[in-house]
Image (cartoon, rainbow, N blue to C red; front, top):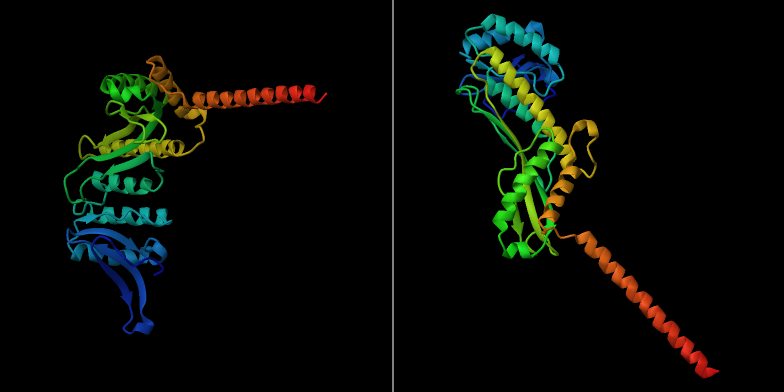
Length: 315
């Protein structure tokens, strides 16, 4: 059949003709679970079954007491073929079978579609919460993208009122984030401060967690409400996928994306400097290099004077 021939949900059924192994022809692979939900109906190469095969699918739906139909054409490039088949089957079995238009099935399909497109790294984490199965009551879907941002701070903060500083910076950071990111993230808690050696070998570090999160559930089971929430979920997943690209990259987002990560880092740094707790690591390195160059210059001057004195003695 030139497809995987497997199913993670339910039992596989095959429509075929021929009595012997050498003359068997295979036409449809179908999977159905114990809840009488049909999860997939695929012809060769994951294409939609042709119109000549639809009566056999009719027979299966009627005689196997199918209650839910969740096939949407996933893993197939034959979107038109599946749309035509599903439309035909809906007209034949409307009112008897739920044709996967339920919110749970739609949300699950969207989350599966975007999960692999949202990039992650050591500081950027994705969490998806799926609604219950298609046979259960309508449930929420939730998308959460977390990102951890860091700044070096003075060691004295660790020994003093870190909670006060953490709360102040959290409030400042939320305002800065609202001006530099769209969609706006939420900062779920006070900034955390880690002593030197905990997160960085050379400096104490302040951490702020950014969360882009939304919960999605239609107001009712009606088609209009379900469609509105489907569109909202799809747009949010698309935005999260785009944001994850910039959060995990050294590239800056273009101005039209309204996603100024460097502006956020600099804005928080200015507030830390204002509170007198930011540690300027780059400035310390520059100062150390300046001292080294000065020492080298002093050494060269001393050597020069020594040579001059020896020259006088020799004369």
